[in-house]
Each structure stands twice: as C-alpha cells, then as structure tokens.
Image (cartoon, rainbow, N blue to C red; front, side, top):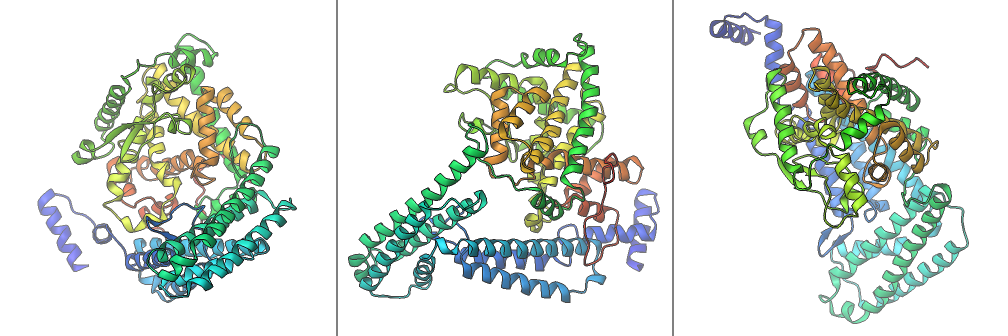
Amino acid sequence: MRNNLIFCTLFFISFGTLLSPRLCAQNSTSSLYEQTSEMGTLIVGYEKDVDAINDFYYPYSVGGYYSSPLTTFKSPVQRKRLQEINNGYLLKLKAANFNTFSIYGKVDYVLLKKQIEASVLLLNQEEQGYKSLAKYFPFADSVYGLEALRRRGTYKDGALLAAELNATAKMIDSASLDLKKTNKLSSEQLTTASAITLSLKHRLKGFYQFYMNYEPTFTWWVPKPYEKADIALGNYAKQFSAKQDSLMAAKHDKLGIKGLPIGRDELIRQLNVEMIPYTPEQLIQLAEKEFEFCDTELLKASAEMGFGKDWKKAQEKIKNSYVPLGKQPELIVKLQDDALAFIKANDLIEIPALAEETWGMVMMSAERQLVNPFFTGGREISISYPTNAMEENDKLMSMRGNNPYFSRGTVQHELLPGHHYQYYINNRYKSYRESFKTPFSVEGWPLYWELLLYEKGFAKTPEEKMGMLFWRMHRCARILFSLNYHLGKWTPQQCIDFLVDRVGHERANAEGEVRRSFQGNYSPLYQVAYLTGGLQLFALKKELVDSGKMSFKQFHDAVIKENLIPVEMIRATLINQPITRDFTTSWKFYDKIAKP
C-alpha cells in the first residue's frame, strides 16, 4: 500500500488530482496483469500439451499434418491421452491457490476449467459415438497398428505388411457389403462414420509414404496391397456420404444445402459453454423484441422518404443506389473514413495510427460469393462485388445487396473499430486467451459498434437509417432462422424465404447466407452470436459508461484488451466481481425476456 500512496502523491504533483489508495491499488493491479495473470503459464502449458498430443497422433503425410475435421477424427489412443491431459490439469486447478488470485487470475481459472470440462464431455461423447459404430470398422485396429509403426519407424518385413494390408482390404470390402444392407444409421452417425473412414484413409497414407522407396522389402511387397486398401477405404467413405445425401434430401428441400440440425438439448449445452444463460426459446423472444424496434424505426424512415408504411419500396430505392462496377473499393474507403471521423468527433475510442494505416482490402471471388454474398473482414476487408464470370442477374443482385447505404452500416464492423482492430489488439494483449475466444465476443464487439453508432446518430438521413436497420434486422433474422432450423422447425428454404420477405434480401444473397450458416465451418450458435454478443456489450456499456463510472475511451480500451473471452467474464473483470472456483453463467443482460 505504501508504494501505491507514493504513486498517488506523484500523480497529484503531476496532474493536480489525488487518487484514493483503493483506486490506485486497482490501477496498479490492472497494469500488472495487462498482459497475463497468475494463470497465464498454466493456460499456455495446457494449450501446448494438447497441441503436442494432437500433432503426434493426427494423420501425417509428406506435405504435413492434415487439419480438416473430416480427416482428423481422433484415434482411441489419442482420445485416451487427451483425457489423461485433461484429468492432470483438473488436478492442477484443484491445487491452485485460487483465493489469493487477482480478478484476472480468477477469470482465467474459470475459463480454463470451463474449457477442460467441455473437452472432457466432448471426448466422452466422441468415444461413445465411435463405440456405437465399431461394428462398421472391424479393420480400424489394423490401420491404427500400422500407423503406430510409422511413428517410431519400427521395421517389419514387407511381405508380412502386404499380407496384413490384403486382409484389411478384404475386411473393408466385407463391411461395405454389410453397409449396403442397412438404413439404421442416423444423419449424425453417417457424418461421424464418414469422418472415421477418411481419417483411417489418411492414416494409412501416412504409414505408406513413410516407408515407400526407403525400405526395400516394403517397396517390393506393399504398393499393390496398399492400393487395394486405399481404394476400398475411399469407396467406403463414399457410401456413408451417399447415404447422408439421400437422408438429407428426403428430410429437406432441393437446394443442395447440407446441414445437420443439432436439437434443443445440444443448443442448451452449447449456450452454457458460451456463458449465455438463456434458452433457445428465450433468445427467439429477444430477436422478436429487437425486430419490433427495427420495425418502428423502419416505418419512420420510410415515411420520411415519402413511401409511408411501404418500407419495401423505400428499400428498393436504396438498393438501386449501387455504385458502378469498379467503384466499390473507393466507396469502402470513403465509408471507413466517414465512420472514423464520427468516432473521433464523439471521442469514443483511441485507435493507434498503425492500426489505421495497415488495414487492407482484397476482392472476393465469384465462388466465395456463393456463400459470402456480403463483404467480410479481419486483417483485411474482402469486398463482395460482381466479377466478370458471374451471370447478369447475379451481378445485379450483388450490386444491389452491397449498395452504399447497406454498406455504410457495416464497413466499420469489418475494419475499424471492428474486426481489423480486434486482430490488431488481440495479438498484443493476453494473446494466450486465444483458445477461450467465443463468437459472442468475436462478432459481438463489431456488432456493438453498429448499435452504438446508431444510438449516437451516425445515420443522419432516412436512407442511412434504413441501411443500418437492414443489417440490424438481418442480425435478428439470423437468431430466428438459425435457432428454428436447429430446433427442427424450419427448412433451409423457409430460412431463405424469411430473409427475403422479412428483411428484404436479394434471393441469391439469402441463399448464400443460409448456405454459409449451415454448411460452412461455423458453430451452430455463430449466427446467434452477432446480435446477442452486441447486446451483452451494450448492456455492459449502460452499466459502466451511462452510469458515469467509466468514459467511453476507458470502457472500450478495457474491453478490447481482455481479448475475445465471453462477455460475462469481461464484465466480471471490469466490475471486480466476486468469483468462486465453480462459477457458472448467471448474468441476465436482456431485461425484455419473459421469465419461464
């Protein structure tokens, strides 16, 4: 405390303000743990131990380790080793002197414990899923055994290996005949079985590439038997995929959108993991409440434009304001400059000059626009606009869907102070929290800026308001269509129709949005995370900034430097919330949801 009092005295001499010893102590602690916490070393150790196990046990080829989930289904020994790592770190957590930790250490403790417990559960589920399919893989142990030889370069006579591979190929062919006779596998089981088969195929390939051309008896005996086993595994994987396609076609429509509704129980489990203390039904209520706000604002803007309550006609006028081909990059630069000028004028956040200097842009390919009809961002902004190879109707829909008023609401979402700024700061502050990141912060932070800028009057004309409201409605719609889909209530076609009718999407853009949501590399909650995460941060802003406890600059700097952890944990840090070892999510950040 004596050192803190000295600091306060020096602060008074320099700035003419005397800080309380308690506030000085908090500032000192905050500065001490700006980059790490008492848990930082343990977290990095866990992450690297898990990486070491996965790197060692995943399939390997001459070109390097495979990374696709479809080719890296874990082997039994890999799952066992990961569970042993998990159990070891749970014991370390139990032994940690939690009560002496700062709020930063306590938050990290809770996050690591939550992550390990989620890993334990998922590994158990994966093990049960594997066991339920074991009868379809009588040859798996043989492949895993061959892979084990490769890891330490164990010698085995080529003739013996050839005989083993011939026997494996026969087992695969026999399993393939049995599979043709059954239709008992669920969609989830078929997906898992396909992943297991492809993983085995790549494990066998890694074994083959290691010895081929280096070990004489292997090179003499093994190529033909390996080719038989490899082809058999490829055909077996296709069987599972074909059954999956047939099942999905029967359940859904003819759009070719392959998704897998996960059901209410799994949605609730994932919401718990993400620290969202609401049910899917309550989040649907949230989206409907937010839609009501959008409807009210939309009708006001439509009336101001002279279209009365016919907001779709007003929106149609806005869509036709698109810039000519070749001019979209210039528009992006202007819109980013407009947003930054407004943010600086309102003293909302301090953005380093280097962050402003180093954002980049690329043009999105026609193929990628099939699943990303609007621009995306991060280190750079990827601009979605017509390419020469696109059909004329698709060109027009892309131009209309990325018009200046729609784009005005989201350029800062992708660049500054949105995703580009996240990339810039999160690489510099508490980067060890990377494994704790959640889409509710990844997308919540830039979405929060959309809400804040609208509240602050960034949209001045009715056209600008309608442009920003289009995206706000889109975020509401994402919650509604993704949750209803995963609850088994809506088909992809119903989701597309909803985006067209309720939000005003161009149909091709709506199809791209739904395809991206259900068959891209997104978690089932990703689309829910945008508005939900934004509302979490908006509620926290009301609690700390609107109350006068923090300035906007202090708030935004504090939030972004905690990295992309669940917003409830950012809140716990900022308010110095009492936390126990067994902390569970409880922050009800949205007061318009009816109690169950």
